Image 1: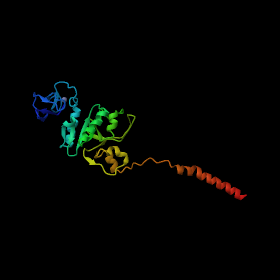
Image 2: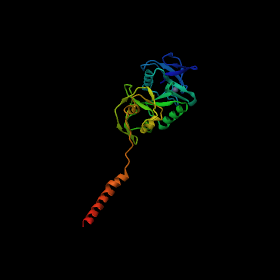
Image 3: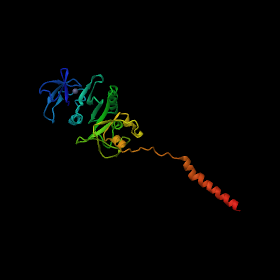
Image 4: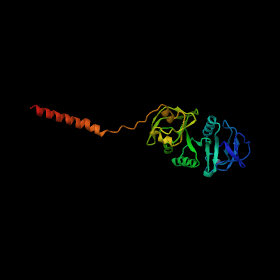
Length: 256
Ligand SMILES: [Zn+2]
């Protein structure tokens, strides 16, 4: 399903399209037609199953999340084509050079990395929006492990965007904090942020009320693990008792 299609050389929104007319898919170029029933909003559907098309496999939830982002940030573009890399981004915020990639289904780590790399080559930062009906489960795919080191947030069934504190080990989510609802208003990364958040920091932006923002607001200090102080250990358990014992022997000796 798609919200936009090609009409001759123009891009047309499903809201402006005519029923019965043939349109062309922005991605796979196969014929599309408008449908007004079945979902709460008009959309295009493919007349045949294409060999490969990301728009074809988009679910209703995917389209609704696109609308939800546009509700929060009215100036974004939905389904914008990037012909040089042959991709169609879900939601593009031109002013901030941010691309929101919505993920409601399985993705490979390789595909996730290549999207970030290719959009990055055009100067865009990818922010992942992960549907928590599919992600944020106990078992974590390799792609999700990686995306959680990037700018990524979850969205729940009530369309709340959120972040969370968590521990993932061996592709298992072993600890999970409560939902931290975020606002889709990006903040620039400060120059001196806690080192432990470096993975998030290289993404250029973080969002209001996410893990990084709350950490910075509350000035949580991420202290390094205390080093074993060998010298102190040696002094306390060997040198001092040994010296005391020697003193004791000397005292006995002098006392004779
Ligand atoms: Zn298509």
